[in-house]
Picture 1 (cartoon, rainbow, N blue to C red):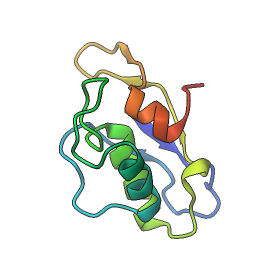
Picture 2 (tube, rainbow, N blue to C red):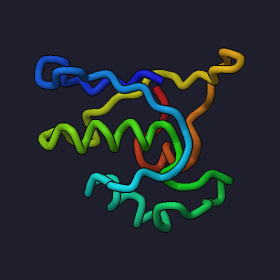
Picture 3 (tube, helix red, strand yellow):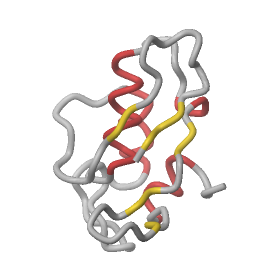
Picture 4 (cartoon, rainbow, N blue to C red):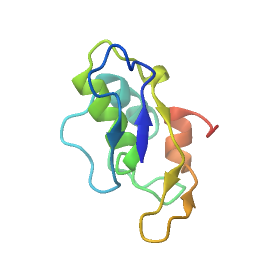
Length: 103
């Protein structure tokens, strides 16, 4: 998934590609605050996904940690695509709560 930050002129490499998996070990404070509000990092939520294990969370975390002036509201996501079949993957409830409704 390609992540667009909206800071192309300020960030040397504004695109990040990420995949789902395990929770990151270091979390950007802004993301940690959202995770805490939703039950905590690593918690399986009502949507069935583990909070923090999504590609969107990992990519946003990487961007925020590497660019201290960047804010979560400035990060934009492209449509996620499942690599094995090329089908679009809708944003999960966790990511919708953190990053907003898919556009």
